[in-house]
Length: 286
Image (tube, rainbow, N blue to C red; front, top):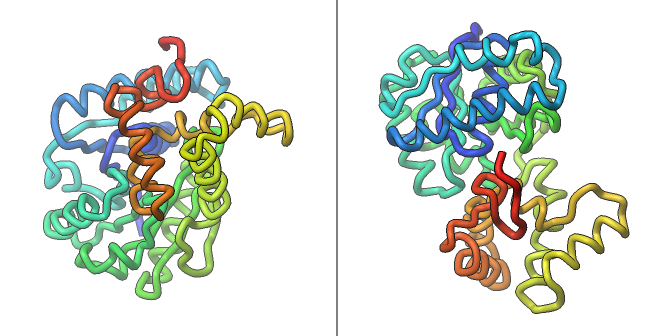
């Protein structure tokens, strides 16, 4: 299966990283989002990623490879146009089941018959989305971690309906874009990474909701006690508080209370995390 033309649906923090990393490794990429303002924001993210790759010494970035990647990315807010030549579509739209269902129903109608679909969903099982794709045998999960160029795992998880040849093609693709493919043998909510990470973050959220301590103290305790470079609320800011909110709203009563807290104190104030310069913490302008 040839994979050269890749479309990424959604240009938020992680979607833009996936698009740039893919282009950086020589693939032609179309980045899709819902309207021109969203795509203008995406262009800024791509430019900042080029700067980051150079600043962090990613191989080849200082020799023009970052600029070459920018030149391989095209943007579109028309779905049919964005996927017209796609060999693989990677979906990274908001972590909301209704939004994903709607996207896949339209995507299944307009994408070429050969096109493989992959969801980057961090919490939803691919089998929950497969019926809406119109091609469950060509659908699976391809999950990336934030800061894909450094934390370069790509968790590949199929369903019972996924064609084994499609699965192998996506594993090979992940390797070609500089990722370490992590082959998951059967479906598991949260995959590997989030099966470990989400309970950790949820515990931190509950400590805040219960008034046990403030984010700074919780983070400091974790960093000092474990030697980890970041605490949970620093991680929340990197992931993005909108994603944290959407995931927490699908949890139990305590998690929904945490969702309400971050919406009132942060999201409604435009404080979405690192991407906006402020979340639980304030970040210097890039």
